[in-house]
Each structure stands twice: as C-alpha cells, then as structure tokens.
Length: 166
Image 1 (tube, rainbow, N blue to C red):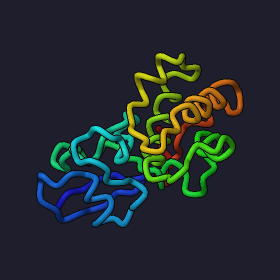
Image 2 (tube, helix red, strand yellow):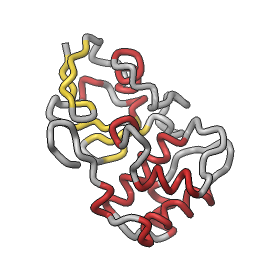
Image 3 (tube, rainbow, N blue to C red):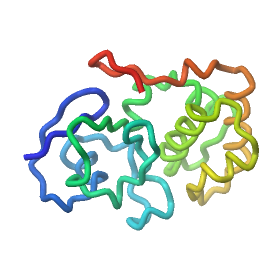
Image 4 (cartoon, rainbow, N blue to C red):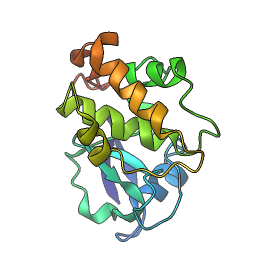
C-alpha cells in the first residue's frame, strides 16, 4: 500500500512499486485529466506538478514519490477552470483538439510560478510539450497575457484542501 498526497488529499493506493504515476492517477484515482500520449516522457500530455515542479508522470514510478511530496493534477490546479492560465487558454482559443492541453497548462503554470515574466527563450525551454494541432503561437500568447498583468503571480498559487499552498 502506497500513500500519496494528490491535490491536497492523502490517498492510499495498492499498486506495484514500478507502476507509473500516470496510471495510478487515471486508473486508481479516476483523475483522467492527465493524459497518456507517448509513454516515454517526450510529449508532455502526462505533466503534473510534483512539489511544484512539472513532472512527466508516464515515466515516474510511484515508488520514487514520498508521501509528503505534493502531486497536483489539472483537476487540482483548478477544478472549475478559474486558474489564470486556464482563463488565458480559453480567452485566446489555445486548444483545438484539446488532448495535450492539460499538460501544456501544467507546464505553463509551473513556468509562471518560477518566472512571472518569462522571455521567449524561457517559454521555449519550459514548454517542450508536443501539440499535434500546432497551437504553439497561441500557447506563447496566453503565457505572455498572464505575465503581462492579466493576473498577478500570487494568483498562480495552488491552495490545497489541507490549507497548504504550492
């Protein structure tokens, strides 16, 4: 039995140690916003935050995650879509098919948390997710919109049910 802190809630899961976090989230916990894209950490559709750091969950075995580490999925970022990055995504029509967008939003929110006013190079280095629809220009525009005052960086914090903030 493994204990995980997911979206501010302590969860217990009965899985093999080498089970990738992605499958625990989707199959054991029913959090299907995190997507399976490639299984080799290349596409980024499976991106979650692990203690605030964007992490490709498809290759992260649950045995490497401590019970105190905070896992945040797209559902935990904002269950109602009110996170500043999500709002910018909608306002600028970033998603087309939408499959990769949860991972993109997670990568973008982590970037803005560490660099509230990222340069184009910062964005290129942080947003390495693959989008088959090619919405990269819109992704950049949405990140810039958040950075340029559509929201304050304090609004990028995630408040968990247990009261903690990441």
